[in-house]
Amino acid sequence: MNIVDYLRISLIDRCNFRCQYCMPEGTEIDYILKQNLLTNNELLTLLKEVFIPVGFIRFRLTGGEPLLRPGLVDLVGAIASFPETKDLSMTTNGFLLADMAKDLYQAGLSRINISLDSLDSDTFNLIIGNRGRSRWQLVWNGIQAAYEVGFDPLKLNVVVIPGVNDDEVLDLAALTIDRNWHIRFIEFMPIGNDKLFDDRGWISSEELRQRIGKKWGLTESFVRGNGPADVFQIPGALGTLGFISQMSECFCDRCNRMRLSADGWLRPCLLNEMGQIDLKNALRNGVSVEELRQQVEYLLGIKPEINFKQRESGTTGIYSRTMSQIGG
Image 1: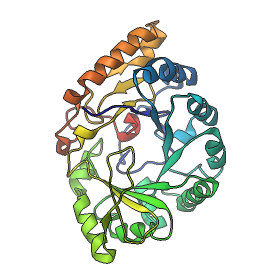
Image 2 (image 1 turned 30 degrees about the vertical axis):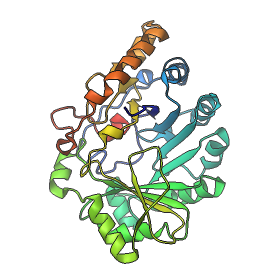
Image 3 (image 1 turned 180 degrees about the vertical axis):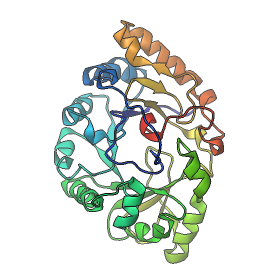
Image 4 (image 1 turned 45 degrees about the vertical axis):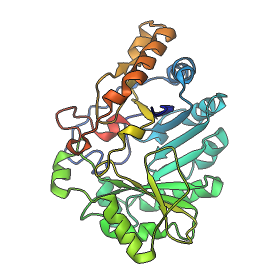
């Protein structure tokens, strides 16, 4: 049985981008009211008194866009200070990162993943739903700042959308040749974006590997991370290429994570809401941390049965939350 010790924590459901695959145009989103978000103290209580005692030692901060969360640097410092914390990472769109990278690094953030779905500013604007001034350069500045302050290796996440950015796969892969950057190609999947997905479909990781291998060759890498990526390397490159294949390959059996939403719902599986627990309201209603710990332990025990193994049908008919609301 796989050890589940990795908690993805959504700090906020709001975002300063509106990416097609996350919040498709025309999607109405009911944002969580501030008073319904887990407070920093509530989150730290849950980590210290509930999650760490049952074995969670790796934490990733997500959103929405986590850099929008007030008091983020102090929160990072508090989580990093727990003796049991073995790894503390973050996923961000990088737009606000240039001014925050140093503080986050000094506070104890171990690793950072930055979304970069295109190297072309026009394509980038199309993907993020921006009709105004291009934001690409500010994101690129954030990537450079993160690397310069010491986040090494740096991971860049790329959601590959057919007909939108799939022609840039080779250019993005080339970033790993002279830099110790880890590019992660993610198969496009249907979560709250059914119309876009139906129109575009998806490209398998195997097809991307074939494209890259034809250009440079490709070998399996000895580098492994905490996630589900299959890791490869262009021969002689400093960095690596990871392929996250949730559509073409089932990796439920090696899933080592749960997800905590910004409003305190613990979800055992990205694509299945079965068994989820409302930890925030339980905490506010006076339920003891001992009882909450027992509930989480029970959920850990049944997680293998909850894992959603029919990923090709996405979330249709299960729930209508977008990825930004789930904190994927």
